[in-house]
Length: 505
Image (cartoon, rainbow, N blue to C red; front, top):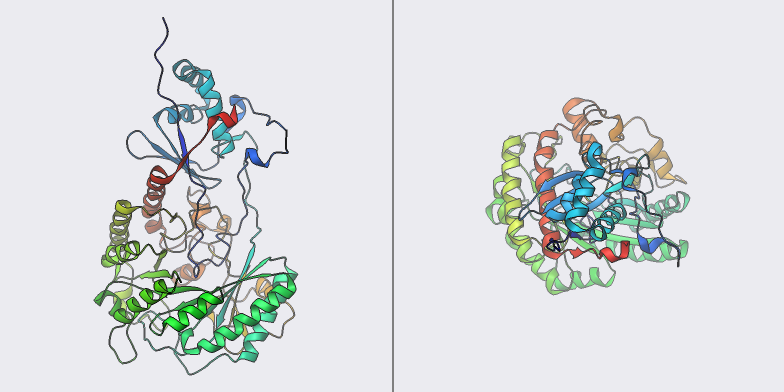
């Protein structure tokens, strides 16, 4: 009697892992370059040598999360997330129980047929879910982008509660700006960076707009002469954006990031003009201006103690406009310490973030949000450090002094006159230290360590006076990471592709 045809195993995937919003990434999406093995990378005409299932083991740190309708999300720091239907998950289960691997696979073969089980196992190997025993991938410290913060002005027309700058009437001159670009390019060439990313910031850079344009034109020309690709973004409060300025940014290939912390009063409560009135109406107008000009703005949302409960509203606003956005946490500084209502309380921020995630789950955009849902964490790929500070990042102030981080802009390490300022930034042992997660107490055994990397080092130092310990926000992160991964799973379920197992026969 012929056995009935069983349902088939299915693996859904998406290789569309969007980068962090333009203004956020300081380290090329992490400080590693881990590539997935693929059939297409094999020499023409060659055949892959498939390992026996007994030689395979789960990828280090892989986790499995049940979604719905029998679908499971499998993710890990060394492979991109995939969705397994119930039947593929049955096969995957064999490798979660090493002592029963062959017995479970035999049972699966009887149920689905060997012609289904073997290609499924091979596909899991190719996607990185399974590795040869003893051949786990390693983190490689090879960022491709040198990021540079260009502090073009200290002036600003707003007085945001959490700002770390005193807003003095200081502007970067074109001469100083060009010297900063030249210094950054010298370091980019010396250290083999093919891409230099310039972040034009302040203060409010649109108050010094002509200088921004002039400097970026210079950077494009000098980058081309040195074989370095130039990327650029303007970090703005948006209030001064006009159609003409939006078009000028677009013409130069500059990205735009606009800060929007809430809708109406929520935004106005922490982002006011110097005169005291709110800025939301003007910011919302600027976003519309940018969109109409064909310039898609990235939206930066800063969650504070007083805005956390309103995160769903601003996230819905960004989703309605199909805009990329990032959710960031407030960081206390010397100038904001007196605003006690900004302080983040664990349960308040967790509740606010989860409510925002619920809004996203109802819509689920086509773009991946893995690198923009939780503060400084990048869940799209593994990394040893939270950001590129002290490694692939520099900050130039209006006088041409060079600091490690914009939050320490008044603690310079060197100047634009240095032949290789990045080398001096890397060598510094006196200011902010951005340690590997492997060196942080409380992180070494954490299942999230290669995504979180231990949190912002400056944030941790302010709370603990140490750099070698986990973030004081660790509990917040751990509560949110599984839910952020769930959103990616739902995205793959909606938009993902199904693997063609015939490629792995």
